[in-house]
Image (cartoon, rainbow, N blue to C red; front, top):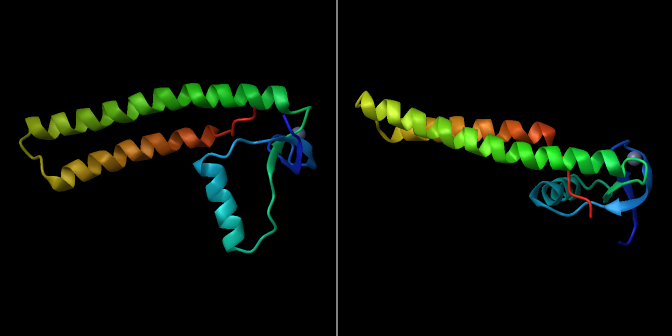
Length: 116
Ligand SMILES: [Zn+2]
């Protein structure tokens, strides 16, 4: 794996390390930086942080699955409850979707990029 200069996701130091795999969060952050005309910085993992960052990523991926199931469950329960109460309408579906989205977004507090 080719190493690149960048900022380590673990310790925040400018260093030479393994670059993060670009996902929508990484590319979003890059776009955001270029919009603000900030210098381009690669997100990397230095050798010292690599094991803990890999572990973090694994935990994040696991929690993503759980949060997705949780979000889907909340959505279904809200829809089911409003259907039972015969108060289901577009607004109710939207609120249920917003609640599910909120739960899913909570999982990103644990976000860690993937390093190969
Ligand atoms: Zn580091």
